Amino acid sequence: DSGVTQTPKHLITATGQRVTLRCSPRSGDLSVYWYQQSLDQGLQFLIQYYNGEERAKGNILERFSAQQFPDLHSELNLSSLELGDSALYFCASSEGPPNTGELFFGEGSRLTVL
Amino acid sequence: GIQVEQSPPDLILQEGANSTLRCNFSDSVNNLQWFHQNPWGQLINLFYIPSGTKQNGRLSATTVATERYSLLYISSSQTTDSGVYFCAVGGGSQGNLIFGKGTKLSVKP
Image (tube, rainbow over all chains, first blue to last red; front, side, top):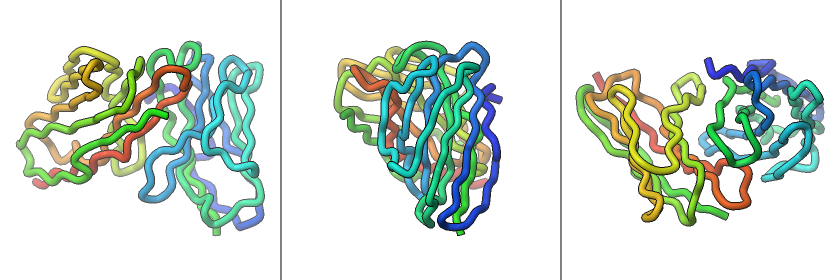
């Protein structure tokens, strides 16, 4: 158990819908990262937060948004869902500022868009 | 940005065999991690190893930062070692890890 908690573990929804994925980082970790892993694809970085502030953006679509709350949990919002958004979405956390120290990953949220 | 190449892309072993997985990266890094993604999709931390050598049971890893590569050694492989092994690096102004495409390992009984 990495200590990073993601909910829900599985989600099935329809095209055009909106979903919210939730992540609680390890106790004491201030950085949160979101990654997307599509079928047979590697892990693509989406966005990163440190202590409530956005620090880096990767290949995140405009239909997707995220935030980190004062209690340090984070949410990833996916809207106007398309079939191609079906993927495993991972949250990771680390203790310090970006790119310092080890990242720990949650078990992922598996999204299926029908 | 930093490029990460892993080799081989696929590897099939008999139980008990040893293997070496390689990760090459294109720029200096201050973060390098190896992960194992099991068949259920979980990403398991294996090593945090921006430089030097570490060992954990049957697994060990070496990173030669000056030559921009890292190696993961698996000895006496077991069927439970099957899955995909990812190398991920971070460095410079990048605040996130860049993942390689992984090595898919299948260990046959």
